Image (cartoon, rainbow, N blue to C red; front, top):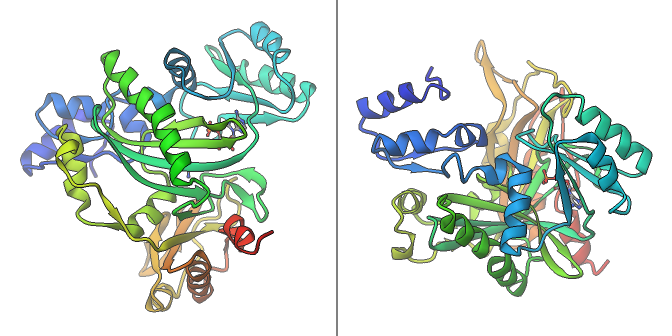
Length: 378
Ligand code: AMP
Ligand code: GLY
């Protein structure tokens, strides 16, 4: 199998097969500079350079950029010293938000309810040599995700979504990579979306270009809708998981055309992308134990029956063992459906979930609850 950390091997593979576009999905190879090395070898790559991928790779980088560009986000202190971090706590009210710099697969953020908890967490974070931490203001509001393609000059909005980060129903328990999602997210009204593009995405893209590290690829802005308007929580340098699944269910057209245009700095020449007005919803089926150590090897049956009802089942962490489909990861399946309303998509997705037999797995039964409550006027 091709080792993607061996960039020379990736380039040789592409050359041998005359590959015209490489789409770099996850963040680690972006932060490692795979896009730079492919471009230097004359191979079109979708995804930001190593420098621009710091938007996801370094929380401190993004906070400093927001400050330089006047982008609305939580107030913060970035420091490599435990003593300074402890002093910084006094600037903020509880709950305290503490973020380790660097990629942490969603596990680098601690929300501490009390000063004592925050102090203990900081002591643990600084136990790692060379640690750098961002202490930031807690933002109140609803979270929503906004996607855009950019080639460093043109910004093309590419849909909205909301995910469910906590493992348990009613958003309880530890954070995960996401237990389900839906798109569009009506809470991000066209007005708020416009404000987020003008005040957050546009200055980000402009500042990175002005500073010699133009961003090319997909920008996933995690936003908090506060009483003062949308503020940036974080950027991802990729389509989210499972946000990608719901966005792609609604995207109409040739995705390759957009990704290639992005890689070749000619997004401005394309028509705006079209998305179905329907709602897509996905339910993650995870292996027992997730987000801790997941139970591997559990049998999974019934995918065909689930799909016969119109749902799409995306495999996230499965394997074949002697012809039997088995769980092979934390998040195992994304059971996805589309409907005229969120309620219809939700019913279809859960009907498909119920057709799947996965005794060593679990899922949340309330994906989409915010919109269901809003529809009921709650
Ligand atoms: P991040 O990795 O920066 O997205 O943080 C993970 C999660 O922590 C976010 O999705 C939010 O739910 C929460 N979070 C991060 N920063 C803040 C903040 N400043 N205020 C409130 N919640 C936050
Ligand atoms: N679901 C959030 C992420 O992919 O980062």
